[in-house]
Length: 162
Image (cartoon, rainbow, N blue to C red; front, top):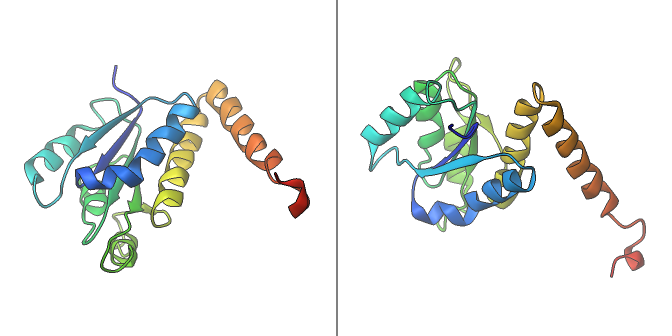
């Protein structure tokens, strides 16, 4: 059986960011497939993946991309599944180029755009899990527990934190 979430990225170097999405999903007990699917270097792979994603059993796609960052938008153009875009920080423009590329999709091709880098990857995983949790009470409970633990980890006073 296919995992319900696909994490795709444009290159191997994007894994440094996208592994945070995979780790977060693993912590929640949500299986995910990870793949390198470049919009520019492997367009045939992108088309085959995105066109067949729904039939393969995926429910949500998390797409990370840096630089020109066309991967999330192209994936969204080729599938009816929700696509969550994670801008990967670039050396040249610190990921702002990626953010602008992902967030400026034309009407009719939605991409849920998250923050640049690690925070965006983690939040994309949490958002994808929340989508799945709508029809999975056990996942809903795990997600609520994760959020509760995060809240409880915040000290009330700065001196309370070791």
